[in-house]
Length: 128
Image (cartoon, rainbow, N blue to C red):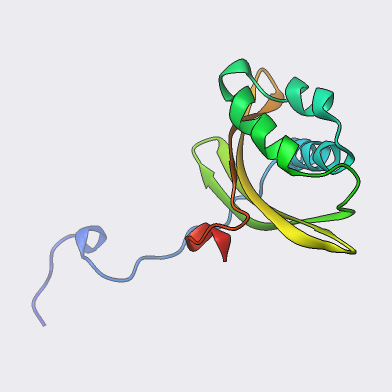
């Protein structure tokens, strides 16, 4: 078999990198946001949202009836650089599941919402 040169440059299956575990502070911020949304605590949601994203986050918050949902589940998670995209599903006893996607990023150690999108009733790869 001929020598293919530097083995590091050969195309083919590559080893899969180790999974990077998200910071505990990010997961705590996501839990805080989701609990505030389920309670209908719009002041807490606004406190976690910078001004440039406030309209889209408040549209999601207003679409969630207060105290209708009692559990949440993170059903998707992705990381790009130091931002985390999360897909959450809220469930309640007599309520249709509510799905939405949001992005969290940290500035000076404080995790804030950078983007939010209501996925309920939409058909996409993220809404399955």
